[in-house]
Every structure is written in structure tokens, then in C-alpha cells.
Length: 512
Image 1 (cartoon, rainbow, N blue to C red):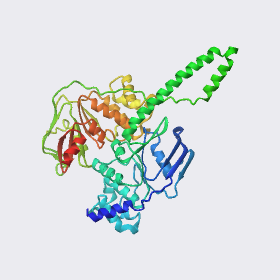
Image 2 (cartoon, helix red, strand yellow):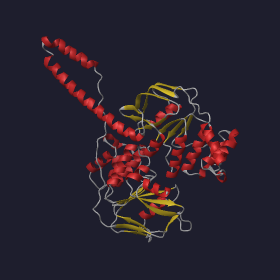
Image 3 (cartoon, rainbow, N blue to C red):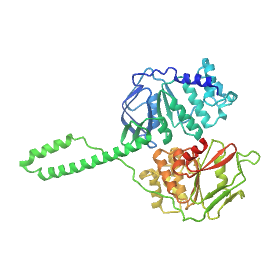
């Protein structure tokens, strides 16, 4: 990219950047229900130009609904929404809609503002689309390229508020890090829903939490929010318990002296005092059910050896394992690389190595494989969660329910039909089946944290970090790559290379 290209594109992003003094929008006590279930109640919120807010909470708490109410795509059941007349929203939904997948890149972007063709040529280059790519059809683009193009289309309209719903979905790590850097340089407002802890920490400086206990605001990053939230919950619990003891003591006094004429006035005074009290709320908390992966004790030192392997079609392989890769007991290996580079194909070749007699993959005979696929197509949509998991497990129902509880399926949740579940819920069902699948000692995991909310991700991180056997996983989630993995395999340029350490260690190695 030429230097003048950067200057022109940067000046374009920052043009019209005089901030609006009044709030961009105001929520006044809004509530919303979905099929009789209250998502949130009495939400009060306002946003100033230039604020960067992360909206967090468990799946199903109404995060995407909040975004759509801001935009005007949905209405609240109660309360009101006031929008500034100067508010201009750029909305990036989870799934981007294209008028025609047959359109070429340049044609698609110019359709937003045809009079801006000159500026668009510079902006396309700035977003990683060289001139030779401008005639490519939208249908040929990767998920990351489509997200970049959708964001560029929004920016041409010069919004003063970007609303991003799971913007890192379907992106590889290189594109996620590009998006982070771009958003850090963006000077106007951002509201973002994401299950990527690292992304939220880099892009947002305020965290608003939606939960069963209400809508709470934390004026800090996501990591700081976790610390502050723990303190707040502890204080609320202490206040509730303290008040319960006080009320119990007062009730004992009332019951004891109610019938005596000499203490009637004091009893009535106590009753009035209690009625005027603002009662502390009992917190709804998930039961801390601990689950772990069962495995045999160490059965071998060398788990697997791979050498001279062509990954993909023999006539045009995606990449080649030309230098020997050795997997030892207890290794936790993360595979990284661009989308479409062959990572999932490689994992499937390891899975089928014995069945397909792939001589370049030497797997120890004492190794039992457990495999987690991205799509979850094997789940039966007609069964409920308990039926589905029981049909695959070989253990008693008590243990099945314990594992489901540990994966946040409690009470009546286990009777939900598979066909009605969200992507995150389906992912947790597939993980439950994997955990109960007969003591594997080598797990092959393809994007195990995709679609999961942040609390579920923490469970998965802990589960595989504490596992005593071996794990090979593909992920674009830096949290699991840092906390679980001790080796990184990078797929790049038709080859695969090993780096010792976690994801941060790998980034430092390639930066040298």
C-alpha cells in the first residue's frame, strides 16, 4: 500500500469526527419478554459519542435483542427509547445479508455511494483488497473477507455509532487481530456483543452485563469487570444474609410479644419498620457442579508421529508435513492458520488414520480417540437433551445429569428438544457426549469454543487444562490457546511448523 493511500483512508475515517454533545440514545425503563419469558426488566441506559461498551451475559439473556432495540429493528414491551436526531448507526449483524452474491467486490461497495468511487479505491486497498481482487464475486470470499467488506460498506456512510453483534464469528486469528487494530483507531461510539475475552479487552472500556439479576454497568474492561463483579456479588450476598438474620430476630420479637398489651406499641412499630425496609435481593446463582474428564493413567510416552504427509488431495495438497511432528503424552497442541488452510482436514486424517491405513501417521495402539466436530450434525433434532446424551453414553443417569449440570443444563433444561436449541446449547450437548464417550486419552477438537458464551468457555478451558491425557485442538480463541496449549502448530504457506509454548509465546517467536 502506498503512503498516500493510508493518509487518504485515515482522513476519511476521521472526517466529520466532531463529537455529538447530547447522548446518542437513552433507554428509559425498558423491558422485553420472549414467548412469555422476561429477558430483561426496567433497563435504564444512555450512551455518549465515543463510548466503547461491551454487552455481556449468558446465552438467552437478550444481548442481541438490546442491540436491535437501539437500532429500531425491535420494540421494547415497556418503557421508551429516545434517539438523537444526529445518530447514524452502522450495524454489523452476526450473519451479513448480501443483495446478490454474484456481485463483484468493487460493484458491491460502490452501490452504497456511487459518487465516491475514487475514495472507495483507496479504502478497498486499506481493507486488504488489492485492485486485482476487485472483480471477485462475493460468493467466493471467506468469512473474514465478507466481514471486512460489510464493515467497509458501513463506514462509507460515516456512522457515529458502530453496533457489532459477534463480529469475530467465522474469522481466523489474523483477521480478528486486524479488526481489533482497526476498531482501536475508530474515534466514535462502539457497542459490541462478543464471546471473545481478548477482543473485548482490547476494543471496549465499559462492560454492561445482562443477567437474571438485572442490568448492571461496570466502567472498566471485561477482565476488570470479572474482578469487580465477584466483589459486588460477595457484598450483595453478605447484605442479604445480614438482613435475613435481622428480619428473623425482629419476627421472633413480634411473635413473642404480639399478644401482650404492654408491648403492643413496640410490636406495631417493628411491623411498620419492616414494611418500610428495602429488601435485599437473593441472588440467583448456578450450582457449582464440578466435572472432569476421566482418563486412564499414562499408557505411553510417544502418542503419535507424523511425517511426509500430504494434507488434502494428492494432486494439489493444502499443505505438507515435511518435518517430523511428534506428539507425546500430556501435550496440549493448538493448531492455528488462515481459514481454508487445511486444519480441519488434517484433524480428520488423524481421526481416520488407522481405518484408512495412513502410513505417514503412526498412532500408538494404546491410544483411544475422542473427536469433537464443528457442525454437530450427528445430534438428533427430535430427541430431548437427556435422551440424546443417554443414547450415546455408557454410564448411569446420575453421572449424565451431573455432567449436563456442569455444562449449565439444569432442572427442566434437560428436556429441551435438540431442534430448538441455540448454536451454543448444541455445542454444549456435543461436549457432554464427548465427555461421556468412554475415557478417550487423546482428544481431537475442532473449534470447541465456537458458539459458546463466556461462562461456558471458562468451563471448557478448565476441563481440558486439567485433563491428564493429550489434546490436539483447532481454535481461533486466544484464551484457550493460551490457557490450555503448551505447543502451537502453525499452518502457513503450504507447510506446518511447531512452536513451543502457548499462543503468546508463539506470537513473540514470529515477531522476532
